[in-house]
Image (tube, rainbow over the protein chains, first blue to last red):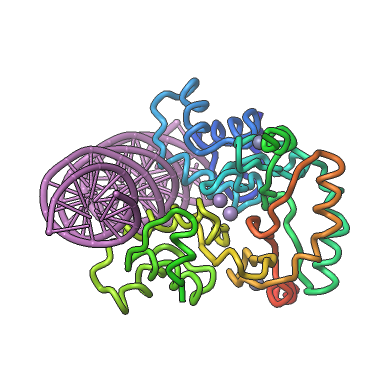
Length: 139
Length: 139
DNA sequence: TGTGAACTTGCGAATTATTCGCAATTAGTC
DNA sequence: GACTAATTGCGAATAATTCGCAAGTTCACA
Ligand SMILES: [Mn+2]
Ligand SMILES: [Mn+2]
Ligand SMILES: [Zn+2]
Ligand SMILES: [Zn+2]
């Protein structure tokens, strides 16, 4: 995982920390910097949280990882090559569900046509109420 | 602005701070707690930031204000009675554009039908690249 | 194989955003 | 007016993220 040339190819130096951060992002899904740090510590206990933050930023700059917002703040990271999908976040129970990007296709196209706005579907979260919580509301 | 009974009706006590916070949310648009505090200070210089936070939470609980996320974190508040609209946030220049909710109608309906997910269109921000930045990219 | 410049890391401190605890102050009720 | 519960201000506590800097590493190249 995280072959050397993936990083060098993009002009990045290859350090154990950087490789491990990238590997962790790929293994975990929608992971926060803190969760990524924890994962990396299984192999490299000494890694500092600020190193994780710096590497996430660097890796995002060269397009190897991306972040999105699932909760009311903070960022979660995922591998860039991962299949893009929508996040349906329930504001009541906090659950995060997935949906294929195609669901948003006509919406995305409408924004492009009407405003010339190119939507990054994988970055935005869709907030609302999940079906479970909707039903519970009927009480 | 912020007539007494609006608050009492909902079981809230009427304090100058609370009235002013609500008034500020209505005058400003997409305001952060800090911006709201500043606005309130024009009339009531002594207000504490934590009072603003507490009142925003209280007002949101009774449905008078709502929050949404425009940037990469933090929350912005707006009056609940305000016409709901989408926020198109450009990740390149940071601009926040508006679009009518209708644009998302078929998308929202699809989520309801496929997942029973009731989308809160006014809460989610749509990330992407605005037309200006898209064009600038062609260089 | 060295060497050195540029890049990274660890560490602790600084920021920023938000929340808490608590005593003093008010608002609403009777 | 008197009482009770809600609210405020204040300062401290958290949490999340960023910075500065000295020490350690990586990589290019001699
Ligand atoms: Mn939110
Ligand atoms: Mn973001
Ligand atoms: Zn739910
Ligand atoms: Zn832009």
